[in-house]
Amino acid sequence: MQNIIIKKAGVEQLNLLLEWRMMVLREVFSLPESCDTGRLRESCRAYYEKELAAGGHVACFAWVDGLIAGCGGMCLYDEIPSPENPSGKCAYLMNIYTLPELRRHEIGRCIVDWLVARARERGIVKIYLESTRAGHRLYHDVGFRNMSDMLKLPGLLA
Image (cartoon, rainbow, N blue to C red; front, top):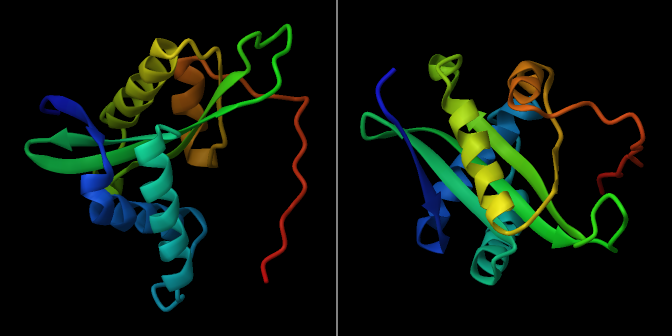
């Protein structure tokens, strides 16, 4: 694999971010091409416009040989401080994706390492993510561990 270059993506790349976000969602949620994602895309557009400008989201693309090979993002937010997280600052990694034909070439790891480094630069010690089954090995290799003390209330789609 050639040199993997991770570059921060900003609001000036909004359409590209949206294109990749929708590609990720279609794969992760097994959405058929016929599924109308127009409203979801517009919600993502509004999110990116607000959070990229405010610094509440960090996005990146992985480039290989001049082409985008993958992407990643990180939501930044505050929670009430605790002994485990005295600053209350949190990072939630998401949208970590590599093109299927380029998987198993360290691209995903480079994306995760880059995002974790950006979180650490901000003094964030609580960094977590949700993973598909396919991503577990990568995240465990990077150092993430399963959380046994979290529960999730499923949302209802209207």
